[in-house]
Amino acid sequence: MGVSEHRKKSPKKFRFAVITVSDTASRGEKEDKSGKFLVEELEKAGHERVLYRVVPDEKMEIIGAVVDAFRAGAEVVVTSGGTGIASRDVTIESLRPLFDKELSFGEIFRLLSFEEIGTAAIMTRATGGIIRSSGRVMAVFCLPGSLGAAKTGVKIVLAEAGHVLKHGRE
Image (tube, rainbow, N blue to C red; front, side, top):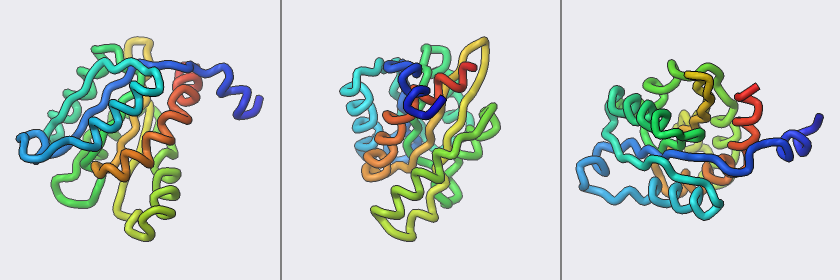
């Protein structure tokens, strides 16, 4: 069965959460433009938001928000922020241990980013994975925190989240 056949059998709608990881936005010192954009685009595509949260760059806050998203019924989580190389960028270190399977999301994201911003794309550690628990699967996509990254990443999420859920449930 080819990709187009798989996509036909994939869920068309899903429940989602957006979690922004940002010290400054969590303190109210900066507007969360990327997180709000992600929520807007996912809702515009007909998906149901179950959680939106802004948390500081702290491991337990990030993990706690993902657990809350799972408990709220999220099938897809998109994080924004904390994927760079600064010492406070801990989104990947926080969430990677929760993944049952890691996705090649980061490679595709960096390829598209390279076309937009050039070699600076090497500084993102964007990734994705699936978390299985309690007979459920949740797809997680970790994006950089810029609005440009959100615009690039949401295209991939919208194109592939249903496909990821289909296979993750097998």
